[in-house]
Image 1 (cartoon, rainbow, N blue to C red):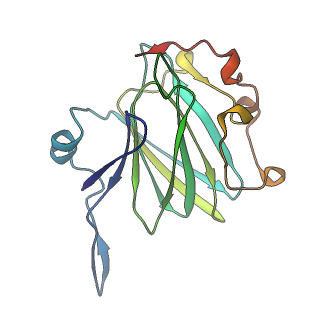
Image 2: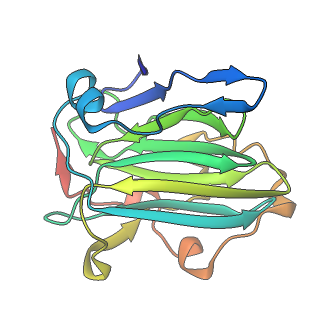
Length: 184
């Protein structure tokens, strides 16, 4: 696997080695040993999967301390525009984001550290999205910032009139009104 650094510390793109032949392809989607050698120690404890249709926007989610989560995410069917926003007080990149297109064809993965709000929009007719987490879901720590916050400068790559959002995701605060529990 190749680890590609992004413009924001704590966010990495993982590109696996994919082997193609007449039967199709094969790749290791995760290797504990290789991940720890190239990224650092981690112990994933929960895998999640969602299925969504075109226009669905999920996010921007995170879990508050002490239930923070680091995530390794990928799209196994379809295509998503994946976003992570830096919400660490004192960070020189606070409020900035990294976006990466994750598709079933490119097999890219996105590693999101704690201190980031995470979300995605579905670019294909349907998408199956998987993520590994290093901490269990804790509903009492579930939080987010507004996916509709224009000050973040995120191009979700779908027309807003076709956006499908949960009621919960429309109620999160704007970044300017957010008191981050994370700091550098």
